[in-house]
Length: 361
Image (cartoon, rainbow, N blue to C red):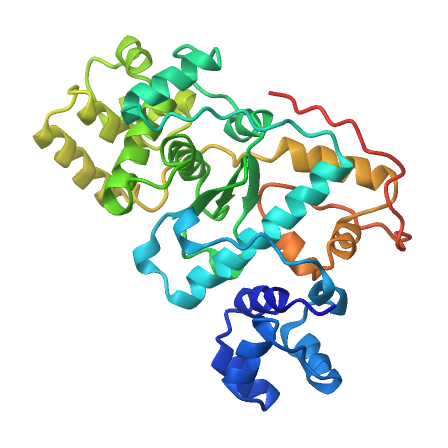
């Protein structure tokens, strides 16, 4: 049976309003509203045009209704820069990410969610508690994506038409999700991961919101990536750009983030901090720093794809199993998983048994 909410997802993924879709189909906007509300299904001719215009497989529209992701349930980065269409495209991709996560969990043995609820803690103390709970001490985080995946966090990339938003995070039932703009630098991606982790553990219940929530997530991220005790024990005698260039590498952060943290901890005066920022802008480091770190890859997706390749299955198999355009799966994997092979004889085969997947920390 035709599912109207699936039409909503496909339309929003194409950054299309109901009015625009109605124009392309030569129907009224009210007709599109009726389809999406399941008041009545589209007639055969209109359905064929929907498939053609939105480029989603026919089978996608006959899947069960998705777990609709509401705007209030998602923490966005850089929301002020986005349009309503861009925001809706991201929310629709969140719905697709949830469907894909269910499929992955059904076919592979993935880590279960293990994030604590720290909503009553102040941000920097919450970061310290989480580090202690995970046995991390004050050491730098070597592979952030792997760490979060080992705790059951589902991590995907933001596709091309969603990258005005730097990152977003949300809970679906008891499963935490983070979607990243993987076109950012390796250092920025790590900070975004820490920021979104802050939202997940601090704001699971939806409060606070807006600028206050963003500030809390930033405080959490700074302490989680650069714990105060670790920075104190390894601080330079003089906080110069060359000295910070060396100090930033073990922590996997940018000079800007390290300077901000040093100022936050009282090691840099306001005047010194502003002077360093002026110098960094003069050198162009605000846009691109020298000696950047490599972008991290998803261990989970890497192993999933490797096991599928052994069975001569690739991205198109995943797309077919989830009734998605191949481009949508590629978008979710972009920059965090290397798609090197697409099976030549996949057909409609299913994995014979649930794979046993172990994620290396």
